[in-house]
Length: 419
Image (tube, rainbow, N blue to C red; front, side, top):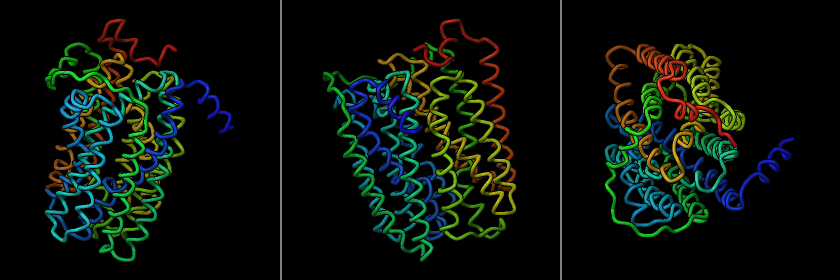
């Protein structure tokens, strides 16, 4: 059954898509393993080894978001100076490998925080370019499913490395430099695979004004409305990311779990669930009304916030992590591809740059806001505020969809592809 599905997907792809997919899968697997550092190990080490300050931990949590915020500038100048998507996407990956490796060579909390922030930041800068590659190399009818397949491979890489790395750190958190060394190797492998992805070298152009990308906000009111909603639930989700680690690893919250168990609950369980759910979510993206799909994803994320931060037992934490994994499966597909519903192929990079820019803004503000509320009130209060923001974003999306704020032409963009 799986083989038949994959074969059907393969024959519906263009020749260029078939040339892209093998290297894309290699990149995805390496990325999944390498991203475990930013999503799990960076904060785990910051809390349990370096005892970093809340500001340092907030910066580490916001590392990839800083990159997303800067991506609008990188995408603008890289395409003008380099002109080949695969090279533009691979270049910051090589720089990220060097930055992450820096973190293995220090015992200073400030230096470690700088390295753990800079590495994911550089990786975040390439995101609009990867989305442009998907737009150019894969047909509309299969794009979501292909991306879902890549996410499965990426999640498997993440699960394997998070699980093994967590068990390795159970032998002593001071062994973290070895985890960083393997992260560097996976990052370099992903960069090398990205270079092999087919992309045409465009003509050299004069350096454009990156702020010109903001013009798309005046051209598509539906896009702006969804951006506003995305900002609300994205801020809520990102604010609570570092609090997940604090909640299960700090004795004052009632758990004080080992590094291995923390990695299992926060890294492995959601990733395994994402592996199981991402292909169905990719098919839903290709076939379903986007607003309805986004509402469904948000409900899973709201459920996670409620159950995780009110949990008093391991089974409840596992249940909440499963909800997070399902939400992340849909969110990963939707986050990376939703702008293709609104933009022309030529404008995809501009739309994605705006999306990643505002993701970066909320990713910078969110973790600090989460720490600020948790320290003055409680983690539970912060989680209820986050849940409220997610539900508010759902109401806003419902207003967008059924309030008919846009004309017939833009409203069509909310539906699945016509192919």
